[in-house]
Image (cartoon, rainbow, N blue to C red):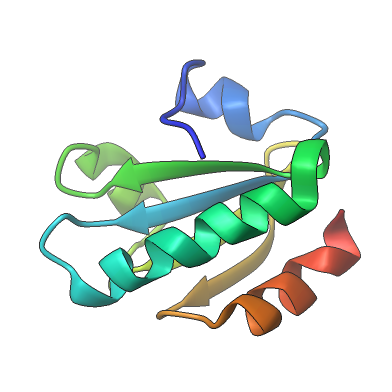
Length: 102
């Protein structure tokens, strides 16, 4: 999992699926998702890029994608949203949800 190095808009336009974790430091469920996302990153290797966006530091991104609750996970490919889910997820469910897009 990485903080984005490319500008956000360029990052999500990649042909590689990009799972964006919109989170907040004060959010308990967001903290619970951190190890799950790490495991997902380890299991998916180069097939999936995972980045974290702090909604308090990136209000423009949070507003653009209408983030109303955290954590919200959005999977992008070629700049388009292909999957979206709010709330903490167990690893097996998250993995099953994103696998068809990898």
